[in-house]
Image (cartoon, rainbow, N blue to C red):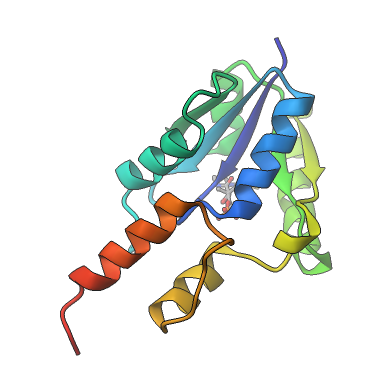
Length: 163
Ligand code: PNS
């Protein structure tokens, strides 16, 4: 069975991530969406919420699993007995950091391959950071994130004390 790990912060999951996961399931038998623990000191969505979101969006897709990891990504990939890391590449601006990470991971574990996938072009400008910023300032993010993310963003905004 060809297992691939798709790591990230997913704070929150966007339709760009969803697109990459769907594409990945056509190439691999199973994709593990691996959410990094403690990636930011103050993420908007808790780890439990981020896990719930992926579970909800990929409910009924047995070839998509969600998990969390700490420490080195290559150690997690080895522990899962996988040898492929999937990363999305949106634009040239992603390339430098991704190239560095892929080569560092290769140096750490030469048998683990990083596979880059391009999302559908309508998602190439989306990032979790921009989604959070636009939403917090009152902009519309529908069509850019799964419905459950939009609902949860709205709930978070409503729960904030008025300034
Ligand atoms: O969604 P992100 O924030 O771009 O994901 C980055 C992630 C989680 C893939 C990266 O930070 C990572 O792999 N962190 C785990 C620690 C690690 O292995 N660092 C060395 C990578 S070369």
